[in-house]
Image: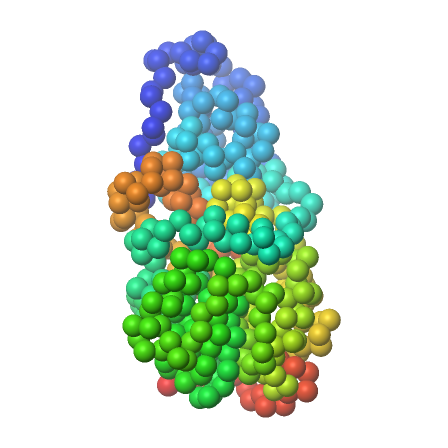
Length: 419
């Protein structure tokens, strides 16, 4: 991937504009020593660093490894103070850049975590998750999802699914893999014609419409995004499914009625662990005695705070849980977990498709917003690919039911059997 051109003017040859020092300093400069120690603590990750004064740090001679350019002394010190937040802001502003693969660079930083908690891109802290009461949840959803359907149409699939696709055949297109994901979810839930399904967090409505059209069920789908709900209602009317699918602009906490199945794909990341027991209570209230449920969510292998830059700039209030944390949804209400599948590498492949499409549409995105927005979303998508390929992030699908439900097949063969 060709890095974007910096929006910063080149410094005066031979001088650091901020310090007025000669461009070529001794390799023992304090900044170089700080960086060298940091890279050593990370196990000498495979990338090189060049400072604003031309000084280079990093011993990998391979010209194909990523090359980090730090264009401002102030950017370096901000990175040292709060790498989780300030790398993203510095990259978005063009104060740092990456020559070579941005995905490989971020992945090498993540893999360096095995050697040290002091990372160039993220720092550990105590486990922390924001509380997301209804008012804040609405604000968080608006911040990310209501920036314009036209933007998402540029790089998502035809049906605007903004969650992990499923690639039983690696040669599938993104559109085919998203349909395969919806079928995978529906088959796990073993939907039958005439049943009632409630969906928490429905995006632009693709899954709800797919369930109704292909499996003959009735669906109530809840979402706080005004733009997404409006789009979903228009699509339901155009496809003649408005009588079978109801799109509700409301918080998941207000789900009511009794339903045969509960499904949530890509919403749990926005709920927050403080509300997991509350979510379980909602499911307990709305699920019929022989009901089934499925939650599809980004997750972690162990509790960790959200990356500071992602939380602040991209997904406010977001928190990917560990499986142990997710059990707070199920245990208090005695739900039986039937199946857990990790689709981590499917999400990496999904994001590779999104990133390629985003790059193809970068000029249009720049016209819609600006260069900083393009660089912000480039880093977000590339960093997300690296998060899944490095194992920092997981994608869990958890199937569950009430403890006394014996209408459960003895094997998984029906889930994977070709139709």
